[in-house]
Length: 350
Ligand code: DTR
Image 1: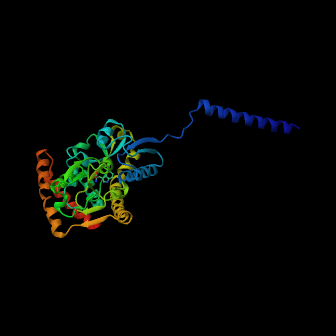
Image 2: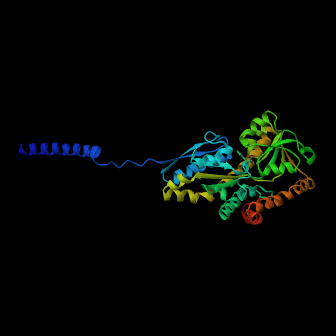
Image 3: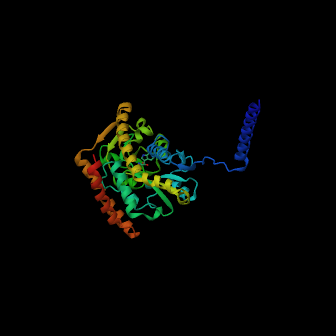
């Protein structure tokens, strides 16, 4: 009998201690709350299906995984947070923490890195992206002093997509074609009527007949469905467009060191990943355009192509002169670009 009473007592005491401990935990002791993830916003200007956004989603996934969920990235494709030309200043102002910009849309602002948009003969986006990354790392250009650069990459070489067949310099003369930055200079040299605008405005301009075609890497034939209107591609394989992904400097400085390391370790890898994705996607897009929309791929005869290329020769010399006048080592940059092009083409060219 005595044993039963003492057992009951011990049971009641245990319950009491338990309740008290719970109360203490809830109201008195600081409860270790599982830390909230660091949230970062990432703005992008073109629609979600296009390559700049595909690379953005890949980067987000990798960062979230490699930081073990410590960081959460909210992505904003389609210019919903910042539009193409507002990207750099928007990130500096903190409208978005991270932004992806096409440097070719502001040729006067990003002079050194836009040298990759000279007609140097980069064979594909993989080589272009690795060369651009080396260029950025070596010259650390001034326009990026107010941001932290997370990665850079380029498109594949540009070709003419048009509603009318362009088979000669005669055919291109006076034709309103859309491009931007360095690529615009090239169209002008060939005698086209250059209409400059960022990519997201191009579908409407094509639809309305403001332009008869555009000059860009060919993955857009599929991603923007340009193949529905542009039944002709003239192969020129010229200029590549450079891109940068930047983050607000204060935001960057506020990140824990291990998170910064994850992002730093990813920068060159992301450049190469994007280049490879772009090169593969261009091939898919060409096959799709031919099969689904009967697009004709026009290859210029050798002699004709040589004439087109001759017209581009003064462009690089003029760029060097203008850059040097602004205190940018244009000659050295072009020499490096050619050297790195050779180096990476050995491994990734074709
Ligand atoms: N060629 C450049 C950049 C570019 C190429 N593909 C896309 C897709 C979405 C946005 C920009 C780009 C251009 O023509 O603007």
